[in-house]
Image (cartoon, rainbow, N blue to C red; front, side):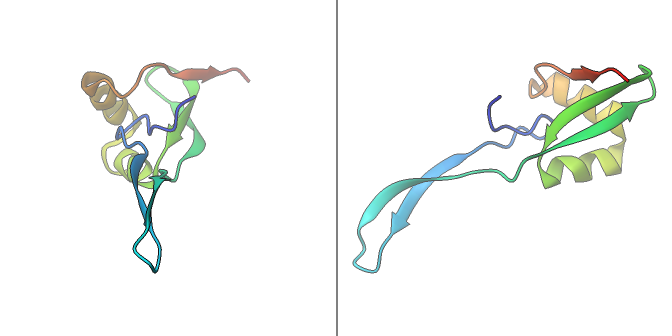
Amino acid sequence: MSKICQITGKKAITGNNVSHSKRHTKRRFNVNLFNRKFYWVEQDIWVLLTLSNAGLRTINKMGLDAALKQAAAKGYLTEIKQLDF
């Protein structure tokens, strides 16, 4: 799976390492992603999402259902992993 937040759409960007002698070499600035399980009450299922800290704060602020609908409308949410217990 690619390193993209499923709620906010944040992804890795590129930049330069700059040494003391001002020599530039390419590097990547990765996003701090982690996997979290949520219980989606409206669908009565557990879902597994790959989130950044900003995505987790968005879910806490708006609620899971509203955040998932907004992410799907913007095209960030491609698929939801459903967990079986």
